[in-house]
Length: 496
Ligand code: GDG
Image (cartoon, rainbow, N blue to C red):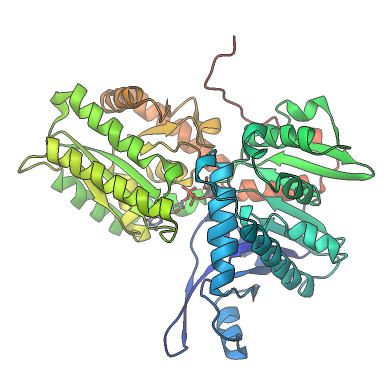
C-alpha cells in the first residue's frame, strides 16, 4: 500500500549545507545522511517539499536571490527555509531543544536547565515552522514532522485548522515516566504529541515508555493491553480520534555504503592504513561530541584493558574520532576537556617511542576517510550511555565487506534491539566488563567473526532506510495493523 499524496517533510535543518559569506554570497552544498538519501526520491516522485532551517543565522530579510539559490540546490523537490535569528537559535535550539529535551530524553536530568524563557521560545519557533508549513501545503498533503526540536508543530497546525494527515518521528529515545515527569511542560508536550495521526519511535521500549507517560499524565485515552506488548503498530483512542504509534528502527542506505566500501580508492586507502599498522589490531570509535555517547567510558575501559592484558601492549591501537558538535553549550565544552585529559593520561602511562595507544581526532572526517576506517578496523567500539538508534553501528557493518570485523555495542543503543545476538553487548557503566569485551573481540575465532558479521550485515541489508520509510508510510494508512510483524525486543536483565 502506498501514500499517493504529496509529502511535506519538516525538520529542524534543511538537507543542505548553506554558508553565507561576509559579502552576502551563499555557498551551497548537499546534505549527506540516510534521511536525505531516503527522502529525496520520494519527494521527487511526488513533487514534495522539505521545510527547515537553512543553517545560517538571519541578519536581514531573506531576499529572492537567496531563496532561488536555496531552491536550486535541491534537485527535484521544493525547499522552503524557516529563517532564525541568533536569539531564537539560542533559546529554542541551544536552550529548550538541547539543554532540556536532549538531556531529559537521554536520562541526563542533571544537565537539564528548565528555564521558562526556553519554553516560550520553543513554542514561538514551533509556531513559526507551523506557519511556513501552513502556507506551503494543500489539504491532501501528508505532513511528516521530524524530531524533538519540533514536537509542537502538529498541535500548532491543528490550531491553524489544518486537518491533514500528520506524522511525527522521534529520532532520540523516549524516556520512562520517572524521568519525563520532571519536565515542567510534561502535559503540554504529551498533549501536543497526541495531535499527530501517527507517531514513530525507534524501539519497543520507547513506545512503551510513551504509553506509560500517557497513562499517568493524560486522562481519557483508551489503551489496549496489546499496545503494551511487542505489537509493532498500535492505536490509541481519544474520544472519536485515533492516534497510531509504532516502532520503526531507522537505518542507512546499505547499498551506498556497501558499494563505496568496494571502491578502489577506498581499498587503496584502507591498505595504506593497514601497512602503517601491520602488526597491531585497531579498535575504532566514531562519535559526535556528546555526553550521551560514552566516550570517556570507552577510554577508561581501554585503559583497563591495557592494565589487565599487558600482552596487548604495542599490539592494540584505539582510534577515536570525535566530530565537533554543540560546543556553545558548557556541558559539551567540559566533555571535550575530559576526553583530552583521558587520552593524554593513557598515552602518558602506556605509550612508547614506537606505539601511541590512543589516536584521537577532533574533527569531522570526509566520507571516504570514514569508510576506509570502517573497512580497515578490526573492531567497532560503540558504547553510548543512551542512544536512539546509532547509525555508526550499521554503517560499520555495511562496510565490513571482508566480514572479519567485530561489533562491540552498548545495550543502551537502540541498535542493540536488532543486533543483540551477533554484536558483543556491553554495559558502558561496567569498565571491567567492557575491558573483557575488548579482549574477547580481539581473540574471537575467525569463523565466529564471519558468522556474526554476516548476520549483522544481512540485518542491515534487509532493514535499510528504504524499509524504514516504507514501514512508516504504510503504517500511516494501512487498515489492518495486525499485518505488521512484532517488533524486535531484547532485555539485558533477567526478570526474576
Ligand atoms: C540521532 C540520534 C539516531 C559522524 N562522524 C562523522 C560522520 N558522522 C555521521 C555518521 C552517522 C551520523 O553522523 C551519526 O549518526 P548517529 O545515529 O550515530 O547519531 P546522532 O547524530 O546522535 O543522531 C541517533 C539518529 O539520529 C538517526 O535517527 O540513530 O540515535 O541520536 O551517519 O556517519 N560523518 C562523517 N565524518 C565524521 O567524522 N562524514
